[in-house]
Length: 403
Image 1 (cartoon, rainbow, N blue to C red):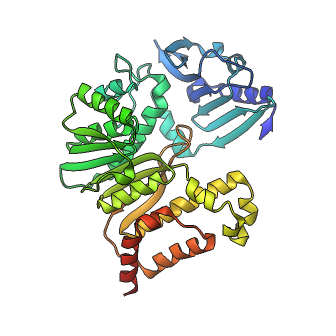
Image 2 (image 1 turned 180 degrees about the vertical axis):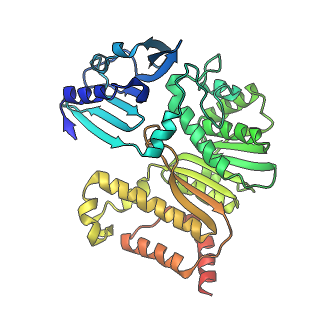
Image 3 (image 1 turned 45 degrees about the vertical axis):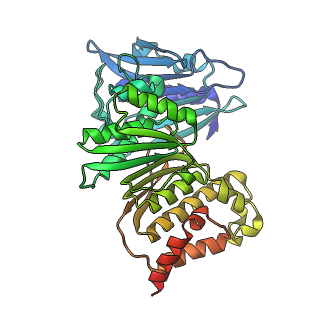
């Protein structure tokens, strides 16, 4: 919905009428020709000496500035006039999001929360130092070494999104810990700066599980940085990092395979590696589905009933995403994995938030499983990379299904 910015900000301000029902407020980004003093401002209600305040934490990329004001002193209009491009106001019952357009108007999105959501948030404490439920706390030494927490081991507000993302991933791992062995092998493919690698390793330790963890990334500087951090926190004997392409990393027996945001066909390489290594658990968050997007760009590869959709670039990209991950999930199913595709975190924290979650059960594929896969590939005339990488294993399963 498009409306004037003044109208939208007035609507947002009305949500602050009862400060105790405010869950959080976030200002971020910048408008054209504006340069706000801070990159982002996070605001939440807190009680200080039994008096309700709004706590503003402003981030400039280097330091965080905290200020507490009484509700009557908080002006969304004044703060947004500094040039922020986005505003989110979330209360216990609704959520209002504003994006300032190039013309200076407001693109407004509004949604109501369920009764369950509201009930859960009403339980949230307004204490100034409230303790949140986390799978790995901010005071872990590894978070300090990674720069997520400061020298006092307190979470840096500017790294909140990364911290939430990691803990949501750990939540999923926690729900899958069906492994009877207390000594396991875990591999993170395309680990980058290894936030997830270190966090997952430390989380397993808190559960009494000893993991030999390997982080794989093509960059030598990532390997050196991450090995230095492992030594710094005293776990260099338990975790190691190698500089190698996923496609050339030697297959090995592994219990858990992770791959967060491996770009384009690197996600296929990660899935193929995990399957060949007989990984019991596979958690992959794909990114940048360019391969099939390029293939369906030609109208000759598009079913007639979809042509009016794929002529629009953004819709064609999203259809390419859906096709790619649907095919990946079906291949995993055919190869004996119980598979689903889930949203592992709200898109507010990362736009790439779909996860392919697979647990090996060893079930046999049916003829209908292959029929569904074949029909999709035939309709769209695509050549999925994962089909090529696992051609032999898929062919063997197909023979078994037909016999």
